[in-house]
Length: 357
View (tube, rainbow, N blue to C red):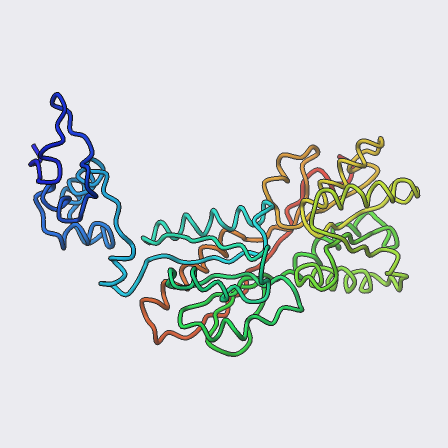
């Protein structure tokens, strides 16, 4: 039986041990598990270095006493909070949801916590201006989405490891993880050209200046020109927002003009594609017989939509895990140089774009 400590000596009620009135300390956990404070610390920070039986006994004591490690107190000793920040331009959408889940799960596996910071309501240029959050974290993962953003230079001045997602970081001490957007967009465009004339293939993307949308558009245009299509490309390119609503409204306008039947669309993301497919079906068009559609990101929406949505697969969760790994590696080895990682994209063909479905 585990010994009763001073923290819970007066908290028995009819033989039941209740949580102590004062905060439980690491000393209380050590007493309860009959181990040293150093052993409790190793279980919390590097459990692989502790024998399985001992670790289980410490974890049982932690659960029984309701102990919560004080990150600030730990930071005074270790010089680390074991918190990694991730700064997002938005919290809405399946892309950001998948990114947060992937980062959170991998950070947890490595013994770190994730602090999510949204700069959608404030400074989109430099997440480092959030001084309170910067004081809490050991490293920062951030996303750059707009060509007009200049915050990377400011990020380089932060005294911590930084990883930029979505674009190649400039020369300096910042790591970057980007996606080969153009390869996936070119593959998707070529797929649509298999059974659709070049003049009937359209690109429906995000707003001008968005790095992802611009890269996908470049590949779309290059692939059409390689198919001996001189244009006018301007009548096949449309800019909006990465939302279902934008896709729906665009499709409604095109349907009113009689321009969708017999066409094929490369959408800037899956949400745009969902809006287009829903509007087309509501107006009596068959997907893919009357309209072929390919999305981008290969989110969970692709399997939920009927027909299932073809999409360019972007390895979002892999990118999140690689970003966390990069931060932790640089924390463990401060002399390690920055990483430059480019992840591949590929087309996942489903019912929305298959010929003869």
